[in-house]
Length: 479
Ligand code: SF4
Ligand code: SF4
Image: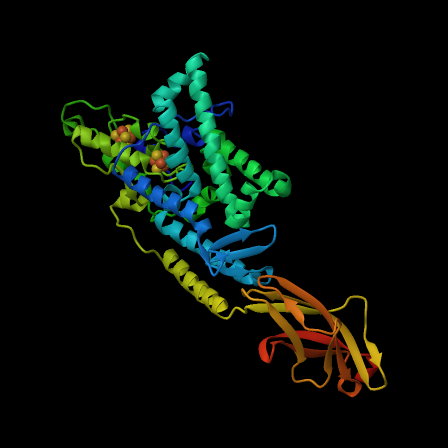
């Protein structure tokens, strides 16, 4: 990942970088090494705690917020129904959704190129739930890292069983709560309340989903933990291509810190050593167990715990803070400030163009939409001597919050439409409606095998939208 600094800063021979041979959380045999991260303390950790409270408030409050009777957000993947800022999106709006995803990805790319893993450290739900909720509960029940380690080595006494069981119950309880709210983003809070209030047998699917989500969250936060970031998360894997030497990262100032040496109360200038006192506090607080002094590493989630830990040590030995800080690799190597590079400018232009296109699509998006296709397995029907008809199926999507009775009219073409059921199609609010109808055209109008037609959808006399379709005529009609 990126250019390494460890050879010169750590004084290791070129090519020997054993820390890159395997994850810091694995031993030589590939067995998991449990991370007992020490509780961080410091200014940035306090700010992150406040940010996490904001995140929790949003996460638990958003499912209760409604606009015009609709949830603010809903991501109902099973029913392919999405509500974003109170607007309903259907599979037919897929291109808008796809474009939103592209804009989001470009934003992530640009943001990462400029600010590294700021997202991971400050707002990623995985980091926030792990470090700001489950880890804190763990500190509360089992104590700090040293107590946790000690507890692990102790025999299974009544006290140890009590502590471990309490922690697992607390973890499962939190996972259960998170699972309920997570599900409310998929099915809506109203539906979730029904699942909770009504008998289980009436909501077997929903109830099973809660149990499955609870089990997954519990497994992630109780056991899998940092492996989500270091092994599973694709965003973490992408860092090596997204970051460059001008990206802002959590970085160790090796120019100032090396050669590192244990602290002695003598003048370091005389001893010709750097400011790093090799206290390993930055490693002890790291939730992914890496040593940031080895340079940029994929496992670093930018949580800033090492910044706080090192600042505390620098305060203790009377040195300036910031031996570990937010900086770019160039910033550390050449004393350069963070720059708006050519690559960032290019990403910004792409982002502006895509955002403009997205705004256009959103502003011109239809509230009622649909598709008309000719009924399968049929050609055309002769109607008397002078007319030909085709049978069609229509699907109409009503994205509004009121029912719409839809009638159909041919636009700019002689002929008529005969609705198969003899009446208008009622499309309920936020639902799909369907129907069948014949288009009847004068035989002398049908000059080609396929004739393009426009069908208007009307609510009373108000045209809602126009849909395109084809009319199939006899082969001979073309001659
Ligand atoms: S190296 Fe520092 S910022 Fe990166 S994960 Fe470890 S403690 Fe967090
Ligand atoms: S906390 Fe700071 S001083 Fe201590 S080992 Fe890490 S970088 Fe060096």
